[in-house]
Image (cartoon, rainbow over the protein chains, first blue to last red):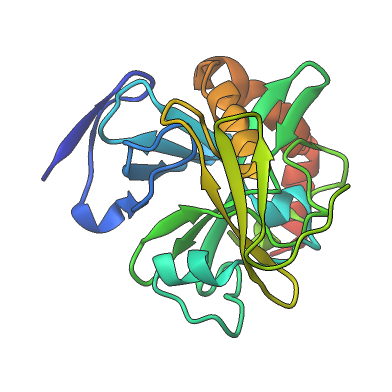
Length: 156
Length: 86
């Protein structure tokens, strides 16, 4: 079983089938293509995206619906094609794709990047950081601005 | 403001040329010719890049707790909900 060294979680054993592959990398990290999603009961509902190639690179993410229960995906055709999905209909969050927002801490407090969520096709685990076609979403959405839906009900 | 037709060019300084290559219903495609060391990015891609870089500047150990304080309801609320679900 392959294993990855990580700065924050020690050495992790994983299966190839668990890996998310981002063919274009993420903006700012173009060379990092392979990430492992990690979730723990005590840090629910956070999902850590740990780079397999860079032990020190780990994004903390949150299912977009936990940040904004009414979030609607509007992906560009180019992004859909990259992860092997048709242009129409738009993929369903939690059924066709995992859709998570990168969390950050800015001067004003914790924020979620809802402008450009990470979208992963659940069938082939190909992913893309997709800039939403709907520009009303912010790249610095204040976390806690909308009360999260009931914990158990949140789909990724 | 400046209006341009398909195929027309805008110059920025001596070294940067922008060509209106195609005009669609709601999008235009532009061609850009610039010196090799000029970064050319859609604005939102730069926002996303800056946001990604800022996001991983802090260690998860330091930040996860701050996120969870907002996201996780207090312990007693959780136990009530679990009982209600039985």
